[in-house]
Length: 432
Image (cartoon, rainbow, N blue to C red; front, side, top):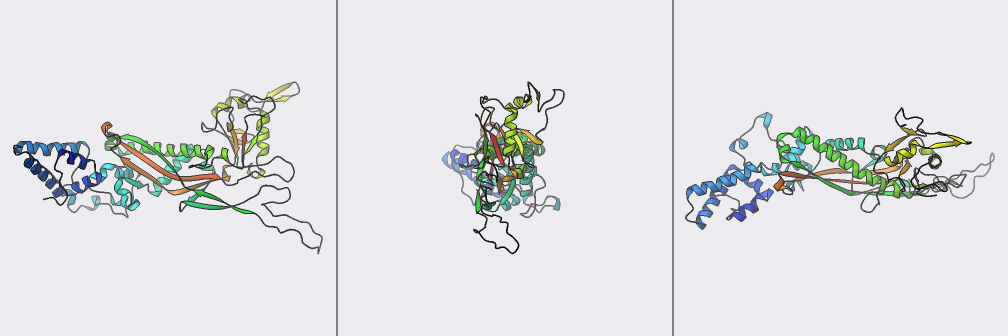
């Protein structure tokens, strides 16, 4: 007799087969599996005395066939015998040899055969039995490394590991250099043996808080791919997850509102907007725009700043010209024989669809991303489910990535001489 509850009707069997935890308990022990089949058949006979042995055997075959079709395999006695060193069960201290091995181990059907892999339990005991596991740190780093190659901001930003939900970074509130620097420090020239006097000199400190926001997404993989090729699965999921993370967090770092997501550069308090020339159409970019944007970049950031723009802007860059007397000359693209120049005024140009379209504020931006903070909450959770697309024979994979980002400075700076403010973040406005 089974120690576990025995289903009595076809409806009970259906409920059992959709309960991953209960299925795993039955399949983990061959004796329990056999007891389940025998007890269910006996219950069926009690309800229907005319049920013969042939039909009883057919019931058991039907259930077993269904389980095998779905990839469920009851443990055998061989599974329970002492194993050789080469195939001994993994312990919580063992690592995964590859990302493919982790994905395969965390696949929902693993939970329905011989229980949860001990290595997965070590990753996340609280949610592991529901199918969710934290990606091992070495593979999380690999996924984010791939994301760096496709992102505009992350590889250039200041990245801070977060040990908790919120981390606070010190900053200096520096808004004007007219008489002081660093928000309050001033210098005075005095004669030999002269008295040092005047107002108190001290910087104005502030804090920037990063609070982890949750970025989620999902994808689907055919169960044939899961079963037939762990290598192909790894390639597919590496691409989908790394590019998905890169795309959507990068979009938020550029244009995020700060409401449940990072504060993007375009919503930075320090953003300087450069007006277009008088009479200039909104859908044009001229050389004068570029010169003025360059002049508004904080001098300390000129060696690190990059241009990024929407591909719509490229034709405008290509036809920019400088008027000289009654004539003029191209200033960026001298001829069509070579490729487009990779720099503008000596700084790299990056094309991205995440920039605003031509004629919209943010279609071209000059930014020093080292002055942008990214807080990484050290977890990337992968969850799989076979039920979402059960009739399509697909497994749905969901990822959850917790991150935050915001500019390190919260205002532009008025220079010592002059009235045009300077900033690490400069954008072209839509009108004059």
